[in-house]
Image (cartoon, rainbow, N blue to C red; front, side, top):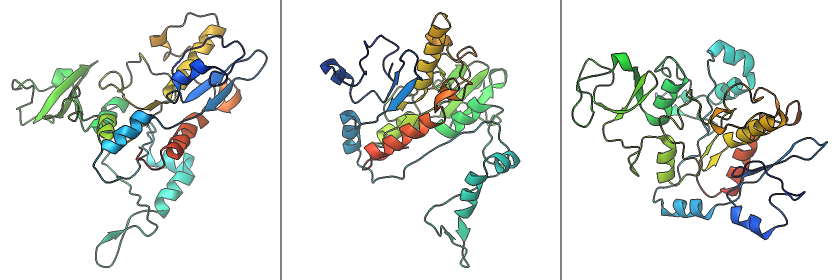
Length: 297
């Protein structure tokens, strides 16, 4: 199986080698799993330049912006981070933004790290905070949402947190509000970070630790379409499909996110093979190598 193809019988032929028909899938496929009898599951990653992405980059008239890596770790306090992420915390403290005698900020090493306290929480769960971080939107409970809206669905009630914002969507118990000029369906007007990044010429990658497709507990695919160039979560979808096949269970693509797909196992073959932690890092590393002269998040 690959990033773009579910499991199939390859007749002992590697999906990327030995067939002229395979070339039609290149360079869009960025990982492959090879499952042979009596052998540990094998994974290979290969990110190559996509002409469409290079063309997008050339159309961008902006100066090369900085590369961006955004990592979200749920339900982590500062004390927890100090205990379990000591190397990361040490690195950030080492490169913390400083202030000189003239009251000017500077970064001695060229890397600028900042610790935003009491600034990052806009809601009670991951989805609400992701919407603020990745789209600049806020959420309210639908029972408490603004009801005074104009014909463009912009809230006119000054007592509401969403005052001046436009209702983008209703999702479960939440009402999502974004800037009044935003339009997720219109090129150049979407507030979603991955859409904005495309407009700026970025090559984008998104990773989750499970196959989230069909899950009601994520932002992507529910409130905004993901639209990332490299969707690393598909590796976990292939692993979930394989687990279902091996357990003689029906493969239901929109239900693989539920707890019956062995996604808690640490390695790609249960307790054998490559560590699942390596999957996103391998993709990010190869993406940076492939697009060394382009911008990337």
